Length: 518
Image (tube, rainbow, N blue to C red; front, top):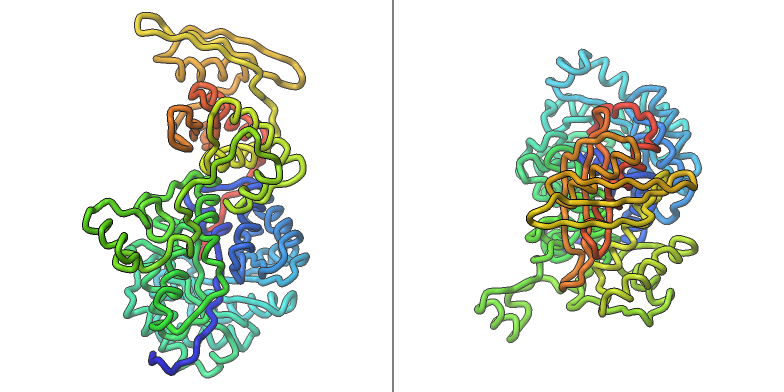
């Protein structure tokens, strides 16, 4: 590209709620998906892929609710090239302001031979039928030739041309297994633009996985070659090693605008709040040195770097931290703060709370303010996340507990829980410590036998009086459930996390297994 080229608008297609949620351990409940969808709208994404409606009743309901509720972005649902999938997708999407059906079908030789057992002619016929059926429901139809990065050039051009003739308005080129290199991706996009005669009737898109750590580089190469849409996820979450990270590809185009001659509609100052929201909800932590949104992204410890920063910030920073949503200091709130201040700060952190939810968070905030001298952003995030994650049927709730432990005596826990209006108490003197004893007590009262697969404790903020956040995963009858608990007392946070997981088990629906997707 040269300096005389006009600036192109690149659509940002976010698939955090579909491909991102397929990350092992990264599933979200109904309320959490709505919260993320609203955050993505505030961020300014053009298209939200809300889910895979045929995959499960829960996925269908969440896509339908997002379609009926969210305004400002196109709402997309994924479907394989078959009648049941496409009709189910439309049933979920028809209430959307701007619905999009995204149909896909594998095209590479390895998928044709081993997965689909279909010839090239059969693939083209199935793709055309799927697109035509989708076009009968809505005007905005996207087609993806799955594993396009490993599909023969001639056949890929043939399928793309046929899909556009059938009515597809967006053609997405997935690097489904993260196999391509930037040069190969550039050449593949260039190939399609030069050889597909009707390519001007569709927007060309790219969807890159990160198996070789090249998802962002490949996506940028596709943009450089002429793509008009990038498919990505917050924090790069997704199948296996994940997807192209939205925050990285967006800020690369913004920071190097003179090179790419592109812009997006993303409000970049919302990147950090949205990243934190998704991380909290999924339990998938962002590494400290993660580009753009990691805690160390704008941190400088080296004396040489610090000296340069004091003299001129651009010596060691190519972006301003404020441009992606970082602040120099945490906002300090205290016991004299009101609901309006709390709600305002929650919005700044990427959350939308009001009504009963705001009141519950405010009550917990006041209780915490009586224990702590200062309330930080991390405290507020933890309190809100606890409320969001708690939006399941609370069959079991904590009434009170007492714990005693010492170096020369077994731990003792007295626990009282409420269930259906009744209180149940149990005392336990066993285990390797108070945490283990608390697990035994919860199991003894609720009757749920679980195996703890993961247990993590972290400080939500700094200081001796910081909130402790417990995240755990338990296995029950072969299924894994997450739990989250927050308290200044680690044992109490553990009990709350355990109950959160128990309540998820109690209210779990029978879900069907998700089919493979791009």
